[in-house]
Image 1: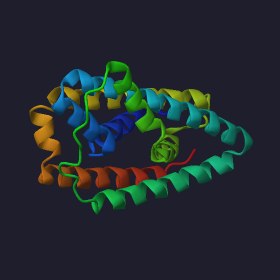
Image 2 (image 1 turned 30 degrees about the vertical axis):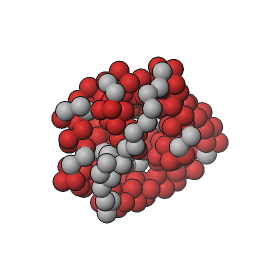
Image 3 (image 1 turned 135 degrees about the vertical axis):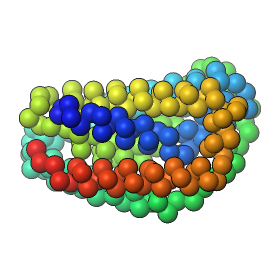
Length: 207
């Protein structure tokens, strides 16, 4: 991939991981209710699910590009439009104060499995990956599948770092921050700006 796009990808991934959603709110809730280990186990499950999405997208896109580079360019444009739509949704999103529900404690394997199933069974993750990852692919820079796997690996690392930090801090700073209405609105607006800027930037790029 074009190395000049890597800082953009990492920055966007970091902000998107920070954006309040069901996954990180679940990590925060469980960590606050029990301990950081419970939250970290859920993070491991969530990130394992991202591996599945990355693999499916990598294999699928490689097939698409081998058959029609033009179709891939069209897919990138459609993806950019979808990111703009997500930006609109984020800008108008409300807050999810106290959305987590208290659950019974689970053992380690069940916590990992719950995070994995939550992520893999969410079709929005695959749709997002299909819109987000191709924006950073350069079909002239080597094997497409390898680029997708690389980007997916970077995204997983960023997600693990952000979600893991939330697990550690959920009992104090992170819990107060995420459950603050003003903080959620700020992050929603910031996410909207990032997604819309990324959609515009990537729609202007050519292979």
